[in-house]
Image (cartoon, rainbow, N blue to C red; front, side, top):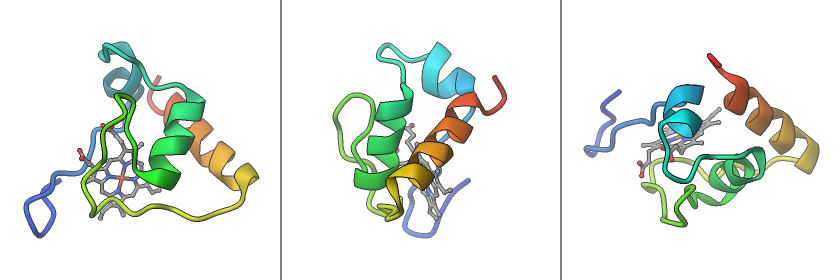
Length: 71
Ligand code: HEM
């Protein structure tokens, strides 16, 4: 999806995040991306991607959900 300002939202299917990645996302790497905006390669995500604040347990649940999405 194209967002105002020119950013394009990410493909969050398992295939795009894991199978097709040179350095695949893991659940801890997804937790880092969602909470700090650092991607699987260590690069900063576009600032329109919110840096989500939530409990460790909620963050883990969200990361696990994203990891297993459309597996
Ligand atoms: C449940 C809420 C969300 C989750 C779990 C989530 C998760 C993620 C993850 C894991 C990535 C990294 C994907 C990659 O490295 O290719 C990402 C990227 C991104 N997200 Fe989100 N996101 C959420 C909501 C949003 C919202 C509300 C926006 C903006 C309206 C947004 C905008 C973006 C953009 C633009 C990127 C790509 C950044 C880049 O390529 O530099 N996300 N998101």
